[in-house]
Image 1 (cartoon, rainbow, N blue to C red):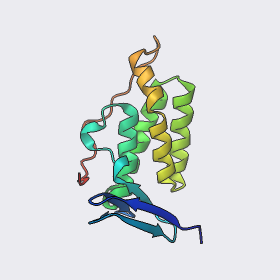
Image 2 (spheres, helix red, strand yellow; image 1 turned 30 degrees about the vertical axis):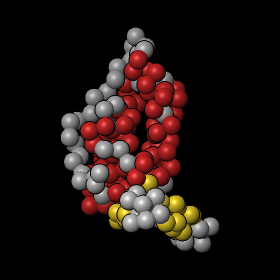
Image 3 (tube, helix red, strand yellow; image 1 turned 90 degrees about the vertical axis):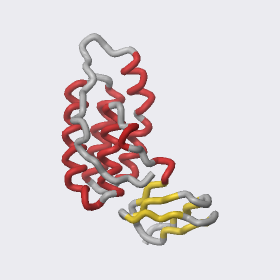
Image 4 (cartoon, rainbow, N blue to C red; image 1 turned 60 degrees about the vertical axis):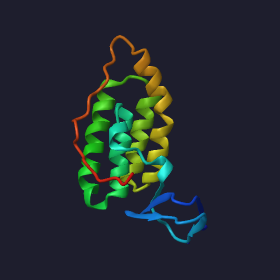
Length: 151
């Protein structure tokens, strides 16, 4: 058994645990006593905010975590997006991060994959602001996933 993980939630804040949405009605501290996949509300990306390739990749990974019924489709989209990013981007930090995030996804370490992808946002922003002459920004299929992420 792993060490308990303590989550502190404010009143009205949500946490997604193994596909379930929990909302605190008052300030509360929770301890997860076993391994569980969870995502704090502050890290949930809404569909309309998935406007860049890495944010779309994040959204696909997130969907596989918080929408278990959509997990298979979300993973397939993740792999499609990952392939597109790797084909279009030469930046080593982004490429290495995307490859590592894919490995984390495959091993079921979704939270770590999400954290890694979020950490790549600044590099992506710099690339989008000043792309190299031979790089293109991949486009993702519009509305490939349409989960019902509670806002």
